[in-house]
Each structure stands twice: as C-alpha cells, then as structure tokens.
Length: 456
Ligand code: 4AD
Ligand code: MG
Image (cartoon, rainbow, N blue to C red; front, side):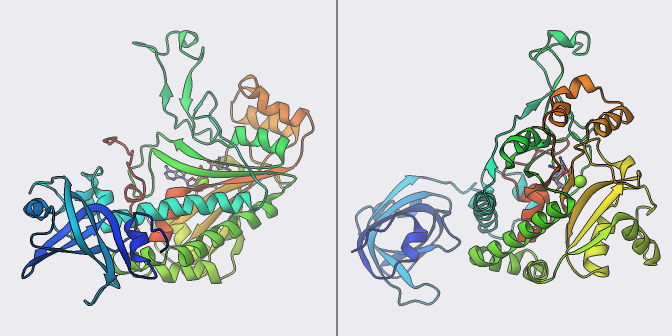
C-alpha cells in the first residue's frame, strides 16, 4: 500500500482504499445521522472537504458535541469508496480527537460573507473557500514565475529593501529612520548616515547585476507611499523585475508578452479547481479573459498612436486624454478590451512623464518605455530599455534635478563596459487580480497595506 501524506488533498486523490489513515483539519460542518455523525473536514490543502463518518460510541466520539464549525480535530480511520454523491472517498473513523475548540463566536460559521467583512478578519479569512483558493494560487504562481526565469537561465537576485535612491523619481517613498523629533535636522546622524527609504523598485540594483550576469530577475516586496486609495494600488506589493543585458526594447517586449502568456497558461492548466471556483463565485468572465490573452497575439502601439485612437474614439472618459499625459486605467482598458480586442503593449512614451533611467529615442522627445495592458486591469507590466550612454544618462539626471553624486554607482555602469540593456516590472498582485478575477488588490495579498490601514 502506497504511503499517503496526511493532507486531505492527498487522501482525496487516492487511487485505492486505505486502512488506518489519519486526517487533521478544521471542521466545516457537523451533521447528525441515525447512530453516526457526518463531519466535513478541510485543512486548506485543497478546496474539497473530506467527509468523515463517526459512529456513535467510536473512541473519542464523546467529544463530538465540541466538533463545532471552526474546531480543529484529528481523525483516524479507513478511507473507503463513498456510497454518497459528491465525493469519491470518505473516511470511516475508528478514532476521533478534538485538538482545539471553536465557540459560537467563530466568525466563519456561514458562507456568503462580504469581501469587506472578510478583510476585517484577515487572520481567519484564509480558512474560507475563496481565500484558501486565492492564496494557493498565489503560491503556485510564485513557483511558475521562478520556473519561467530559471528555465531561461535568469539568475535570481535579492535586491535590498532599504535603499537611499528613488528609482522611479516620484518621491513616493517611505522614510526609514531611527531619529526622533525633527528627522530632517541632521540626516547624517541617522542610522545609515543619510536619509533611507523602503525601496519602490529593485531595478537599479538589478541593472548592476545584469551588467555582470547578463540575465537576472528580482522577486520581492516594494513600497509606495502614493496616497491613491484605489482597488489596484497597495502601499506594499510584490514585484518581479527581470533585467537583461544585450537587450533592446523589442526584446524586452517579447519577454514580457511571453511571460504573461505563460503565466495565464499555467493558471488555466495547473489551477483548474480554483479557476472553476473563481468563475462561479467571483467573475464569470475570468476564463474568457485568460483565453483572450493566451490566444490572441499582442498588439503593439506607440503611445502617440494610442492617444490618437483614444481621442478619435468618441468615448467619454473621466480623465483627459492629451499628448503628454499619462494613460489612466480607463484608457488602457479601452485600448485592450474594446479597440484592439487583444492584449496590448504601448511603447515610446513622452520623456517628460517617465523616470531618468529610460533610453531617449532618436526623436529626442520619447523614451523607450513600454506598458503591457490586459483586459479587466489595464497596466500589469511597466518596463523600458535603459539609457546606456554615459553622456545621455548624465543629461537625464540633470534634467530631472537628480544629483550624479547620489547615483555614482549607477553611472559607473555606463563608464565601465556599458551595454544596451532592458527590463520590466510585473506587479504580482495585479497579475493575480487578472488571473483570479478578484477585483480588489486587498483580496489577493495576505495582509494588505493601504492608506490608513496596516492591521494584522
Ligand atoms: O510601472 P512601474 O512603476 O515600474 C517600475 O517600478 C520599474 N522600475 C520596473 C522595471 O522596469 N524594472 O511598476 C511596475 C508594475 C506596474 O506595472 C504595476 O503592475 C505594479 O508594478 N505596481 C503596483 N501594484 C500595486 N500597487 C501599486 N501601488 C503599484 N505600483 C505599481
Ligand atoms: Mg508604470
């Protein structure tokens, strides 16, 4: 008899009956029959519950009244084919034991709580079907991300979380300090000898490694003190940032598009059980949007053309469309969902609205930026080819009133063996929103940090 690992997922996937197996988990429901009780047990290893049948008088069954919803229990018995509908296997208990009680205040008694309510019990919500599914998917997709890059010879680099440089130049950084009182009075007295911040992006450090190991990627938390309380912005989110030496914008877009497609395929093929749940209870269009991204070739459109399309669309948008302004998510969604009816990559943005590190195009007005847009979300990826020419980078720094002395090491990459290089950042939560159909970023991250909220 093959050994079964103790998780319910393993038991439910058994290919034959087994005697003397043990399952542990949390009681979802208990019902009493004639001379026996039914338990539905879930341990979070899969969506399905294990049905357990406990005969009255079985060892430990005197504790059954305490097997309330939410209680943790251990059951030993025989895994047998279930005569009932709805499950292939059930566990006929020979012994049951209560591990931990849950009283009637356990908040997950009934199904159908709102997502807003479940956010207030973020410590318990992973025990619900929906959040169990979301966080299993999050874990598997993290694996798929590593697999994608490792199979392509990218080296994983752990870039720092505390930094003294503002990569995106947007000034949306959280200060890290050990000073008390007026923290700006004497910054040199601070822990690191100068003002330090939580990183908004690992890109600049990733570039140094790409200019040594050729192909690298980061996968870590990033922080932005943007005060935008939207359903797609978090103050702490996870970003995946590949960086490639000897690569231009076209190569960068190729990789980004291939990456999105592969993750969508992974979701469809490896997370089918969860996808079916999301389709049923979260967003009935989610699978259609996955297929859309998997099957349709990406459209590529320069920013200037995208703006023209939006202006000519006759559509009323909340935010203005004008050359030189950033695209808003309503514009991005129009382009991918309605105009191109395909996943879309917009490139060559005006230099005025982009950070100093992007490569200036020959027109002198645009930079080699690109954003990948998907239906339902808009931007999931932002990237660019980097400015590899020393003089031009220096000019970019000057234009953005950044001091070369602060970026001396970044500038050095252009002094010693500079190469064309490019990369991008994928917001992991934005990707998960796209793959699961979950509409609010707070519901795809275990513990959300947003303006005014950092509980748990
Ligand atoms: O477009 P962004 O700002 O690009 C960068 O940070 C570059 N340094 C990336 C690079 O080239 N290596 O951010 C990248 C992605 C966005 O496309 C979006 O998916 C996500 O990060 N993102 C956020 N996700 C959640 N909450 C926020 N506040 C986010 N800001 C950006
Ligand atoms: Mg962006």
